[in-house]
Length: 251
Image (cartoon, rainbow, N blue to C red; front, side, top):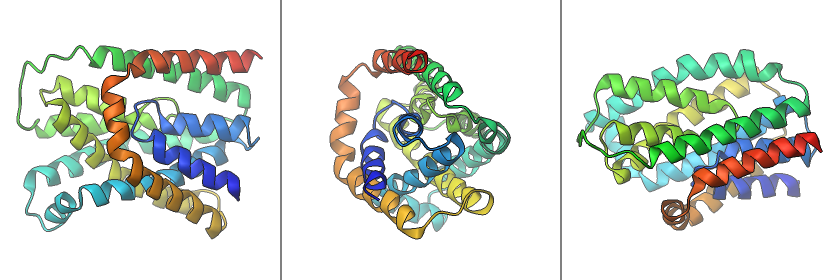
């Protein structure tokens, strides 16, 4: 059971850094715990539930106003982005990732996607916010969701994709980061429901460990790690980590 506690702790830390917490967890689960890829994806999804709950605590007032339909802009953001994410994420999850069986393929896949994440981060840092919008359009929100859906692939950082797109859509870094967090919550909740219906059945103790420890760790480390993420060049870090995954496959 200790391994699931550790996985929860890792998720609670890496979620706030643009390094693909899912990719990191899957690499650990497949290579260190010797668990098959499909199960690794499932466990990673459930681990994200804890950090999604941490986001709802941080932005509890925003979610409350949205549920009560008092915050129309956030309602449009969450509705359109979630719709877009479902269109891309569900087919990838059910008909793509579930068909990958070999650990060698996993290491190569995650390594290449981590390198792609690094490239996205390096490009995203060059955004000039020339549009300077207060809020993007509904079409922007929908495209944001479509792009977010591809991050179901382990190694492709959701935050790197969404924040970079929002920056190029004209938002300030602070607001882009806030929106990136908000759109993750309904998607994670939906992914957990989908996994519960179509995936494997796990002991409740495992799900509790993953959720509780990722929630507590995420809540405690969120603010500090977001400051770290602003100062560290994670683009080069992801490229290096991706190369390391490829070398792991060769070894």
